[in-house]
Image 1: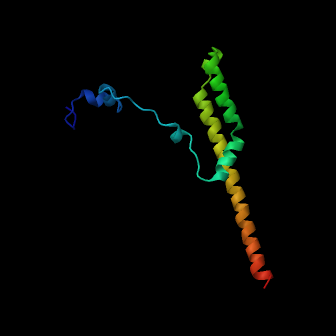
Image 2: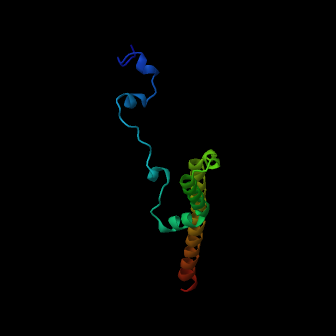
Image 3: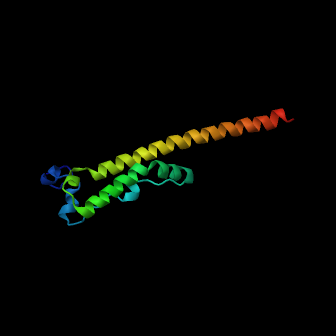
Length: 119
C-alpha cells in the first residue's frame, strides 16, 4: 500500500489519470491564458502593429484546415502561432518601455525647465 493508503497501483499512474478513470474530461487551458491581453491600449496597439506575421500564420493555419493540404499537416501551427505572437509581445513591450522612458525624461526636463528657468 502507498503511504496515503490508496494502493500501490495508483502510485504508478500519472497525476491526471485519476480524472480519466472517473470519466471526467481533461480541459485544455483557455486561449486567454495562452494569448494574454494587456489593459493598456498602447501595449495592445503595438502588439497589433508587430502582430502582422502572427495574423499571417493564423490565416495560413485556417486555410490549411479548410483545404486539407497534405504538406500543411507537417507544420506545427500551434508552435508557429505561439512563437510569432510572443515575438510580437516582446517587441511591443520593448517599444512601450522605451517610449514611456522617453516621455518620463521629457516630462522631467520640461518640469525642470518650468521650475528653474522661468522663475
